[in-house]
Length: 252
Image (cartoon, rainbow, N blue to C red):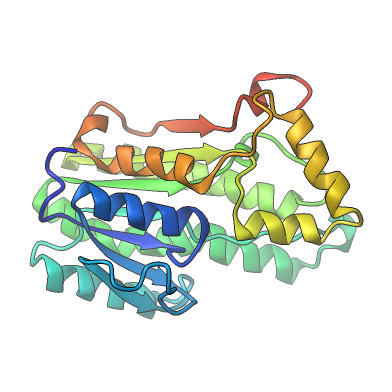
């Protein structure tokens, strides 16, 4: 990937799943990375060159202030990009989901990304270039039973991402989204295990996917890393779906 050397990209939700895979992909491509997560640096990423770690809550502006400082320590011009992967999901019937849970998911899934953008975009504007790739979801477009609060948060996130893309395109920024379907991450496993019959849930997911395979974190990370690279120069406000063909069929 051209231009990666010397560039620094912040990755949220970096300790596991798509975030962890994105850290690996970015470093392999030549980027420096500042990872941020509630968790400590996982042993699977320990020892990687060009990786800095910030332990913090993405809903806390102070966390992003620290990320921004770390990016400037690596590059005085600040972050080249942001790959936003931090998210949460819970399963709850609509009438039984308290307002507090709606607020909590909005704080993590929407404002956790918006705060990251607000912290890092000023340096990109000053430079006149930069790229952001946001992990949304096919639930940004479609809904499922008992995760309405999650779907609503992801729909809001996609809208916020596109709004930022529109506002900052004239300043040289490219902001895009990836909308995964079923991805084999700890977040998915948490969702599956919370259902009455996890085995049936897992089997049903695979049967609904035309390829018959659950998407891997690496497959999503490929797209996220592509979007922050020079090869995606023509994309702005795009939402790329990676779901094994799941949403091509009305059965979804």
